[in-house]
Length: 76
Image (tube, rainbow, N blue to C red; front, side, top):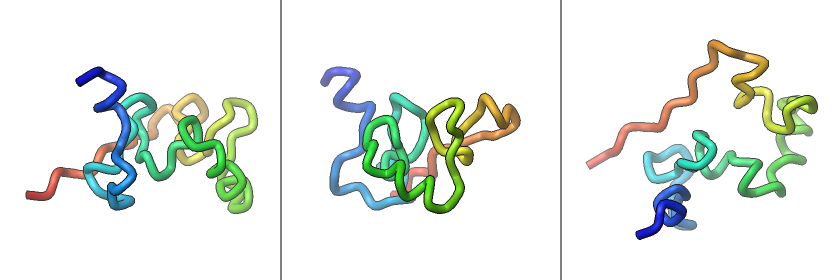
Protein backbone atom coordinates (compact mmCIF):
# COMPACT_ATOMS: atom_id res chain seq x y z
CA UNK A 1 0.00 0.00 0.00
CA UNK A 2 1.29 3.43 -0.85
CA UNK A 3 0.48 6.44 1.30
CA UNK A 4 -1.66 7.84 -1.50
CA UNK A 5 -3.83 4.72 -1.54
CA UNK A 6 -4.82 5.18 2.10
CA UNK A 7 -5.07 8.97 1.94
CA UNK A 8 -8.34 8.94 0.02
CA UNK A 9 -11.73 7.40 0.58
CA UNK A 10 -12.98 4.63 -1.69
CA UNK A 11 -15.70 5.66 -4.11
CA UNK A 12 -18.11 3.48 -2.14
CA UNK A 13 -17.60 5.37 1.13
CA UNK A 14 -20.80 6.72 2.63
CA UNK A 15 -20.65 10.52 3.08
CA UNK A 16 -20.22 11.39 6.74
CA UNK A 17 -18.74 8.00 7.62
CA UNK A 18 -15.28 7.21 9.00
CA UNK A 19 -14.32 5.88 5.57
CA UNK A 20 -15.34 9.19 3.93
CA UNK A 21 -12.07 10.94 4.73
CA UNK A 22 -9.37 12.67 2.72
CA UNK A 23 -6.21 12.04 4.70
CA UNK A 24 -4.28 14.31 2.38
CA UNK A 25 -6.39 17.41 3.13
CA UNK A 26 -7.97 16.55 6.51
CA UNK A 27 -11.61 16.91 5.45
CA UNK A 28 -14.35 14.47 4.44
CA UNK A 29 -13.54 13.13 0.97
CA UNK A 30 -17.12 13.88 -0.13
CA UNK A 31 -16.46 17.56 0.67
CA UNK A 32 -12.86 17.85 -0.52
CA UNK A 33 -12.73 20.57 -3.16
CA UNK A 34 -8.97 20.05 -3.63
CA UNK A 35 -9.56 16.46 -4.81
CA UNK A 36 -12.91 17.14 -6.50
CA UNK A 37 -13.04 20.68 -7.96
CA UNK A 38 -16.57 19.95 -9.22
CA UNK A 39 -17.76 20.54 -5.63
CA UNK A 40 -16.66 24.18 -5.64
CA UNK A 41 -19.80 25.48 -7.37
CA UNK A 42 -22.04 23.97 -4.68
CA UNK A 43 -20.04 25.58 -1.86
CA UNK A 44 -20.08 28.93 -3.68
CA UNK A 45 -23.85 28.60 -4.23
CA UNK A 46 -24.37 28.39 -0.45
CA UNK A 47 -21.94 31.27 0.24
CA UNK A 48 -19.52 28.82 1.87
CA UNK A 49 -16.38 29.78 0.01
CA UNK A 50 -13.11 31.47 1.00
CA UNK A 51 -11.90 33.15 -2.18
CA UNK A 52 -8.62 34.15 -0.53
CA UNK A 53 -7.57 30.58 0.29
CA UNK A 54 -9.51 28.67 -2.38
CA UNK A 55 -11.51 26.36 -0.18
CA UNK A 56 -14.85 26.31 1.64
CA UNK A 57 -15.07 28.84 4.48
CA UNK A 58 -16.37 25.97 6.64
CA UNK A 59 -13.00 24.24 6.09
CA UNK A 60 -10.70 27.29 6.16
CA UNK A 61 -8.54 27.05 9.25
CA UNK A 62 -6.53 30.09 8.10
CA UNK A 63 -9.60 32.32 8.48
CA UNK A 64 -11.04 30.31 11.37
CA UNK A 65 -8.09 29.24 13.54
CA UNK A 66 -10.37 27.63 16.13
CA UNK A 67 -11.98 25.39 13.51
CA UNK A 68 -11.44 21.69 14.15
CA UNK A 69 -12.46 19.21 11.48
CA UNK A 70 -12.55 15.74 12.97
CA UNK A 71 -12.88 12.42 11.27
CA UNK A 72 -16.04 10.54 12.27
CA UNK A 73 -15.48 7.55 14.55
CA UNK A 74 -15.13 4.13 13.00
CA UNK A 75 -18.32 2.08 13.39
CA UNK A 76 -17.82 -1.64 14.00
